[in-house]
Image 1 (cartoon, helix red, strand yellow):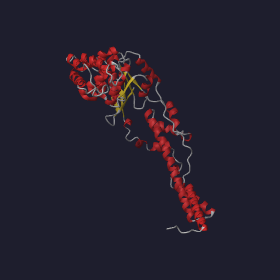
Image 2 (cartoon, one colour):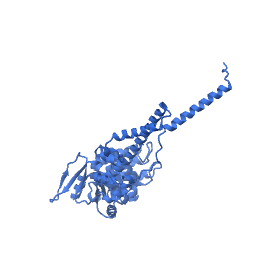
Image 3 (cartoon, one colour):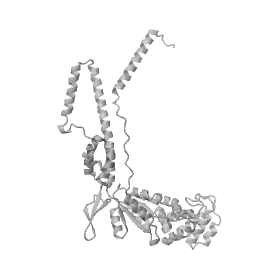
Image 4 (cartoon, helix red, strand yellow):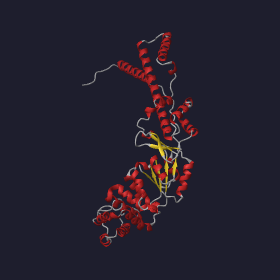
Length: 440
């Protein structure tokens, strides 16, 4: 059916009305659009800081013959940062990553810290089986898997045939060290090897698999640490050693002087006290001075809030992690205040548009009295001392106990040395997982 004929004049009127309606909608949207805030400034970043004195002591330990050193301090005090800055090329194990990740990292990076010396293969294997003499059965199972074309994890894919492996197994079955050395020599020449063609990398993969068969990822990590021993070119750094307490004792090993040199960083104050009593040197990352904290923290305070620094220092003190967390919360609080201000402005504009729609062409005197009435109502809603808007820092500090709910690192346990050279508790901890700070 053909469309009905529409006169040209009616078509023009319809287009004109549509254009007027679209213009009205655009004007209304522009009026309802919230006021544009000033261009947001990029929030300052917390600086990368480290203690010079602590860094010098760490560098001195790196070139010394000392067997063990502890670095302790409250969370966020900069101990871990100082270690990574002083020893950028050290073998660092982050013990919060879990044993699987640490075992994989050791397997991949140990060769470069042994300077890829092929003559260390036999001593590494002998050191591992010296600490774990009952692991010969797991080694036989690993070699039998190679003979059966089941491969070697992280080194040789399954389905690979290893020539002469059966002869080596039958010849050296009763000597685990000799068997492992000959297997490593054989696999290093395999064209399907997934590792660099060196006996040392193959030996670490083999020991890792033997340890896994012996007792999972934990035992594999122990095998690699025993193989490293004192053959590392530098100290072994254990970051956040409190996360896996038993691993520290296992890293020390049973071989005494032949165990790796250890640099231990931990928030565990009790462990640091025990290490100090055992004669191990302990370095502490102290809290910041007021001048240092003020110079850094005032980056997060605008000029109009500069006086709030005294309140922040009184409430928080010189603890670096607390100061950083408060600075982050102040930035977030400032964003929330700005969002609330824009929401209120948008609501007021909507009310004004509704009022103009209901009563257009209102008398200017009536508009002026209306503004006075709104200001009076707004002022009467607050006390005289609360009419000045609060700054972001003030609003945050007023609810400071609640903003740290769930922050476990806020709980700290204090100890003080007595005249009998003993440590007594000054403040009771809130839980068993607490940080300890020693008072002089």
